[in-house]
Image (cartoon, rainbow, N blue to C red):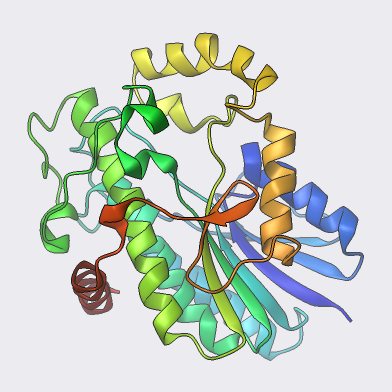
Length: 293
């Protein structure tokens, strides 16, 4: 049976490696890549243009996919993968509609995507959101390179300048770790709300040099990722892009078993940080995202 899988962040890095693996392992799969205009379609790949930093663009892309599913241009939907993410050199970048860019791409866009496409996703199905172990905020997980999350009311986090010294790289990295904590909250809340048979999980790929994530994160972060991290792929501490893409594909296809609401650390469900289990924060984030989507 032919099916469709919608994915953001599928044109480079871990996402591109996962797309190749998914297409190889499932001959009936049609990949629907929500990507910027320079992406190119293939025999089994459909590209829908989107700017995930712009809510209007994301809504339009979702509407386009819904229409293609409805008229039979695309086969039935089997899953959604929110793999796109950004890490910036400060916390003052703003989107066209005034949101802080890291929060907009890493959190808001995922909510708009799931809210728009979940009604078209019959069970069984799986939603996967890429998160990060930087949300722990400790030396074990970040080697001291990423500050711990600084939670605040979602409406505050969504504004540029939410963190101390917002024009610095430290604020940019804090925005990143905080956005990944928020993404786990989002997964927990969606797990309560999606119908039976449609699972949602958070996937942490771990340290993966060469993904391009740090390309806008400032010279120090680029140095660390470009020079110091690659040798770590020879150890259990890091994965190559190819290996990480294979592990993401395992989660998407269900080869990695994980109940809804799980945090999957590379290849198996695990506990996320103690801070990441907070129903009040989860509900507050949901209510804010519903107001603005």
